[in-house]
Image (cartoon, rainbow, N blue to C red; front, side, top):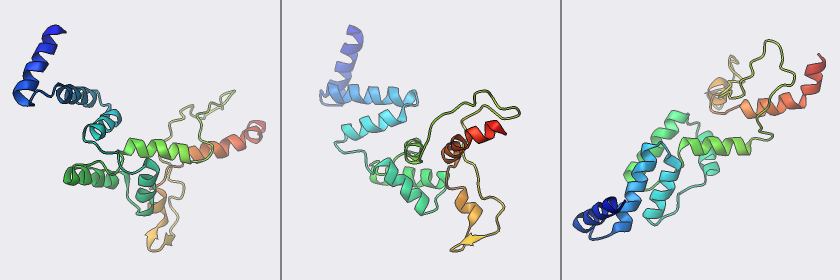
Amino acid sequence: LRELKRQVKAFAEKEEGGDIKAVCMTLFLLALRAKNEHRQADELEAIMQGRGSGLHPAVCLAIRINTFLSCSQYHKMYRTVKAVTGRQIFQPLHALRTAEKALLPGYHLFEWKPPLKNVSTNTEVGIIDGLSGLPLSIDDYPVDTIAKRFRYDAALVCALKDMEEEILEG
């Protein structure tokens, strides 16, 4: 550790005007990114640059849904804004997914007891297109396109839990 400290100090003096703290923070940031800890890395980067971490995840989720952006379209916008401005104004997708789970009523992991025959025990459902196949449109947007912008797993779990006794009784 002494040798590492000496090397960091020498590098800081040579490259960063002696700012050891900045070098250590950058090394920590690189370590977080290497381990795919992007949320923590984004927060650290915001602190290092002396700014907050931008819009609240729930606000970003509302923007994504109300502008009919798919996840990939939102992610492209997030990356573009971050690259152009140098600031993380929008939150990454994982933050939106967490906000979505918190905002949907009745979200909780569940397990059928006793397990139901011919029913998967997997509770990580992902996106369920609840309206697919309906040939309707709202304001010139096909309903199935709109439906794919939302996650229905938590809402479905809530509805199933409400009907659990009736389902188990047949």
